[in-house]
Amino acid sequence: MNNSVQKPATPGSGAVTLRAVTPEDESFLLGVYASTRAEELAAVPWNEEQRAAFVRFQFTAQSQYYETEYPAAQHQIILRSQEPVGRLYVDRREHEIRILDLTILPAHCGAGIGTQLIRELMREAAESGRSLTIQLEFFSRSRSLFTRLGFVPRSESGIRTLFEWRAETA
Image (cartoon, rainbow, N blue to C red):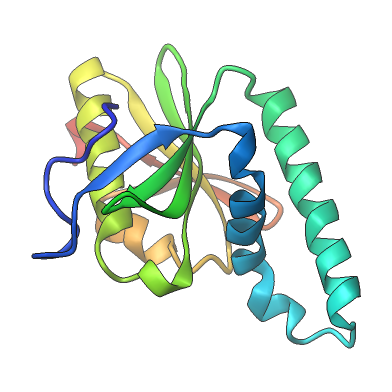
């Protein structure tokens, strides 16, 4: 995938681009991760310090998992008009492109950014003859997005479902 998506997310909204994650991005990435847990943590009787410690622990565990299980994965920051708005982690394999994580900050959701990035990955998968996959938890709000784009469930493991897109079945 190149570092620039061809069209702005919405008219006048600015170009969506990608850049490699750097060590200086850790605080931003922690905030992106925290945004995925905010609704869940609002329901627990913890103070802010406890919530922050939990989020930091879970973020570190997730980061270590990705590094161990997907050492060749590409970790990128999603930029909109040069402003960081999310993260995209992708592992490219011989027969598969696996989206490990695609998270957009809530303030930027609904602007078509995720759809653009997924379509770019779909184009890459089609051109290279590979499938495009993502594993989603059953409560993930993005399940409907991937279904709308033609992804189909392939296997289930606990609370996760592996969704797959193939150009020849689209």
